[in-house]
Amino acid sequence: MAKRFGGKHSPQPHDSAEPTQFDRARVSPVGARANLLFIPPVVLLFMSLGQGALSLVLGLAGSGVLVLAAWLLRGGLEAEAAYNERKVARRPALPRKMLASALTGIGVGLAVISHLNIADVISPILFGICAAALHLASFGIDPLKSKGMEGIDTFQQDRVARVVDDAEAYLDEMSDAMRRAGDRQMESRLERFKTTARDLIRTVEEDPRDLTAARKYLGVYLMGARDATAKFADVYSRTRDAKAREDYASLLDDLDQNFAARTQKLLVADRSDLAIEIDVLRDRLQREGVRIPNPEETS
Image (cartoon, rainbow, N blue to C red; front, side, top):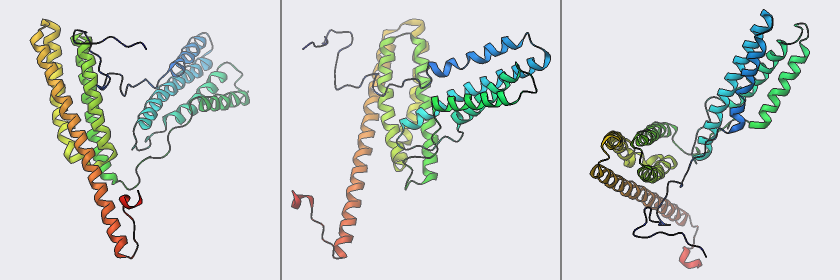
């Protein structure tokens, strides 16, 4: 069986147990289909320039509506991807994909009217309905309900959402700063740390009670890591200082280990809480005269 080369003197030693930058890799939810929807309004705009005043106005209005629909669709796809990524998530506040379908129908209707007799209103309506239906069939609808929110304090969940949004922003800013350094290996090392940090973020999202224990990590520590990354990128891009690179790599190692340890500690605490709840419930049932055999007795 073929085996990938890696070892002590390899530039990128291979360790299957170590997380890589491809773990939890994010694929852009906005694909070619969504980007192609920006082309029809441009075509409509140019086709309307040689028409009369009324046709020009209707064509410009239809082009603007179609651009707005394409832009809303991009936002809706990104919101849906974020919703699907999380186990606990509120439904999107604005149904962008459904609004995009409606606006596509309106835009196509205006486009048809601009090239027909103004008295013929049936055809634009039919074309608009067909366009909206096809758009809806292609991209679907927005998530219409929250998931994983049963039994969760919504106030506490809102607090977690604010902390998580700030933490994700810090991670994105770290990546933006690291690109200035122009070091692919350090970018890869930063991606591994971001994977570890997101494990902690997901753990807190799934159990908001962990926020108190993790707030410093997702706030103060990530803010400091962002500032250190920006400073390293500025210095290293100018000087290529090997000592600065070594110090920053050591910082990432420390952060990675501490974030992973905090995540593991939260998971252990959650399991302990579950065991306590099970024991309490078992005791209550036994006091009511219901005997529940221990797992050791049934095995």
